[in-house]
Image (cartoon, rainbow, N blue to C red; front, side, top):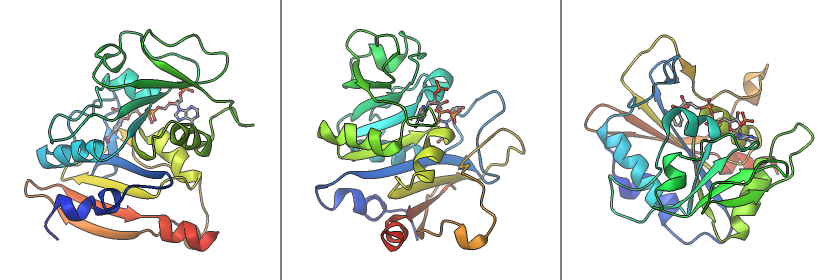
Length: 234
Ligand SMILES: NC(=O)c1ccc[n+]([C@@H]2O[C@H](COP(=O)([O-])OP(=O)(O)OC[C@H]3O[C@@H](n4cnc5c(N)ncnc54)[C@H](OP(=O)(O)O)[C@@H]3O)[C@@H](O)[C@H]2O)c1
């Protein structure tokens, strides 16, 4: 169907969430890449897909990225290409390696949080620390991150990237909705998009209920609802 933001964003905007809802987005090429081998990703997505990403940001309370994305892109994570307010910005940065001069730490455009372990150095001035104890594998359980954000009233959460961060949330069954933006571009090399724990049987594949939305400038948005599968598994 032709892209209509009211339809594509309906599950997020329809009603106020009583419990956390987590949406992930990824802008990828036809061959499933999110960046070149050097990390260049600006811009794989076309103008309309980028505007959709900004509408997504405007629809949530918090936008979450891994520290790899802050290091590669120095993103602002603000709403500029659509109407709406800026969400809180959250960087998952276990050892506090993000540069203190990163734009989202210094621009004052929205509250900014750093999710880190107990031994990480203090965050830059004005950035709130969210300390989470790592799990047995040394990483933060996505459930713990979502619970910590929900405890601050941040119930609608956009996991914007990169691939590792989204993969961890997906592997943990903590993504409710996935917005996959596919650009008519083939890189043939570069950083892969969604990468999950290996499976052997097709019966173990994720098969979300999916709708397809076409943008006028050539990109295609797949909106995937993973909630039915999660409910069936419970
Ligand atoms: N096309 C798109 O839509 C899009 C969107 C965003 C980013 N990107 C691209 O993606 C690339 C970066 O992605 P990436 O996969 O390399 O990195 P990333 O997902 O941005 O960050 C990964 C890092 O974040 C930390 N992290 C994330 N989740 C964690 C958890 N649950 N527990 C503990 N630590 C966690 C770890 O930091 P430590 O290493 O410090 O442990 C991990 O190595 C860049 O090239 C960027 O341009 C593309």
